[in-house]
Length: 178
Ligand SMILES: [Zn+2]
Image 1 (cartoon, rainbow, N blue to C red):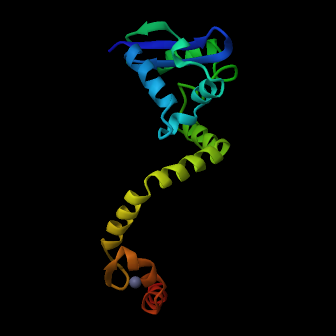
Image 2: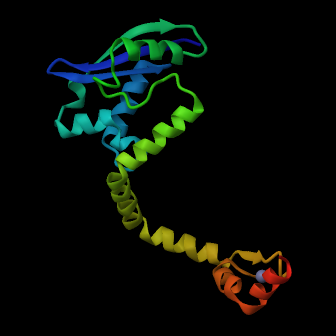
Image 3: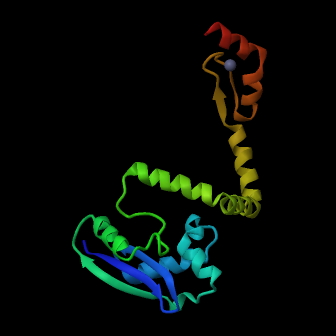
């Protein structure tokens, strides 16, 4: 399998500096463009896309340059080498290192969420508004699902679950089972 390491730049914006890897450059370019303008995508608020939109850059004026073609199965190390070379995290728009441990990745995700909490909340709010009818329908169906309390052997619905948890019968059974 061939992978490509590519770099996105713009002649008028030296900070527009992004390294990625993919299997198909044209396809990846189209994906970048579609994510950039699709606010339903969680990546919508990644540094790269925020930068493009905030500066009102015409996506088609971006330069996609292939840096390296590789047969390595795991192109992340090579991608990381280029991220370091072009310093595209500190002086660019890469959000994460390509070659990181799972722990580091989780920490990045957490930091990212904390740093973008308002935008993410806004995104969730818009999503709920746009899908209010479907979510209501989903909740209605969800509430009909039966649920059995393992302590009391009582069967009820998801809708009545919290009521059951608070009930005397259940509370008594909790204490008896302690
Ligand atoms: Zn119970």
